[in-house]
Image (cartoon, rainbow, N blue to C red; front, side):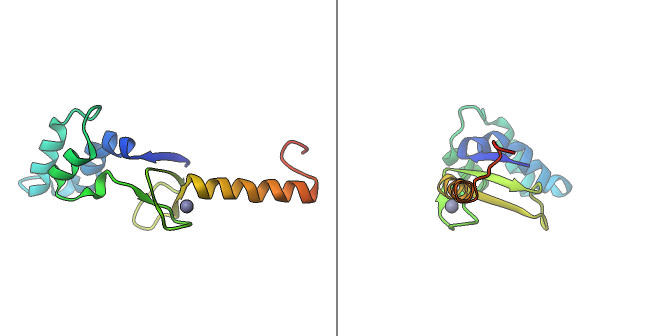
Length: 118
Ligand SMILES: [Zn+2]
């Protein structure tokens, strides 16, 4: 399912995502301490740095790697299956999305057909 992923969207979802990832191991673990600290954050105003300080690394609210060009971007579109260990999910940056649309448009011109004419 198509979804926009930004630094902000990752911050807004960090508590839920942390819980989903560690729900089975929270009791008495350092993951639980982190979970409690994350829950105290005001996610509307929290920064990526605050999230990274609590978790101990920046990977939960950071630039995302584009699967197509391997560049890191502040905004990517998540495409395909809901991410899971074995899901068919991909993350594409704006630059690559533009290229993809250009390819389709070129094809529409040369073949004289497109979604508007069908
Ligand atoms: Zn890209």
